Amino acid sequence: MDNAVSLLEWLTYPRSTEEKRNLLYGMDLTLKNLHKDLKYVPSFDFQKTMVNWTNATQVVFHNVEQASLQEIADWKQYDRNLFTTFAIGLYLDWPYANTQGRLPDFNTLYQAFDTYLYLLPESDVPYYEAVLLQGQNIYFSDYVRDLKIKQASSGATDQSGKRLVYHTDHQVGVEKDSYDEIPQDLAKGAFANTVFLGFLFTSVALMVIGFVIQAMS
Image (cartoon, rainbow, N blue to C red; front, side, top):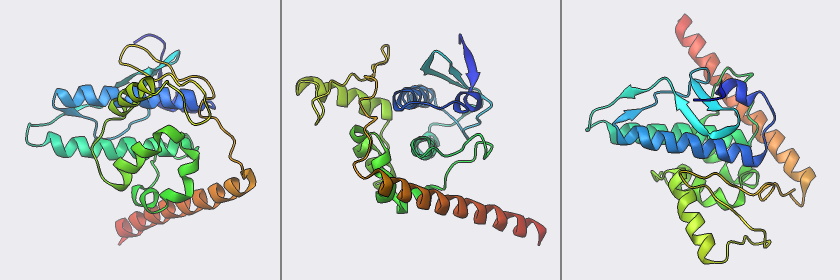
């Protein structure tokens, strides 16, 4: 892959909503193709996951494992949970570089969904509700494709009238700043986000402490 950098390096730079969404589309499409070949990704190794610096929809996982036909359904759901947790953390500005790639806690994200959903791209909220809250096994790339078709049939406008352009397997395009709307109550939103991230950090820290105590006992 040309212009390849590690996911960890890619994440060390501030990214727009457009760039984050492009990355997630590429990661999901790669996972989908791996699953077709009865393969899965056991973890998001940020050093072994490569991203095209100039086209983030091109993603390669180098820590791929083979599954049997009987196992692949469970591994698909496992990868879906990994992807969902990573994606939401991306929009929460979870400090992946500082946590050495540790993902946010899945259960905390599940329980606190209403407190941070305003940070997600509005058009993608139904997707995260379906996969996180309802446990549905839906590929984000499929969701984007279906949404593109729906938008095209309805005149390709969002609620504010802005034109949206979505990805296909061969073409990338989310119109810049289509989702970068500033919350009406910015102060309240910032406070809620700070409290939530503090709670999330505490949850992860307690988990790590628990593991250390268990290992020492």
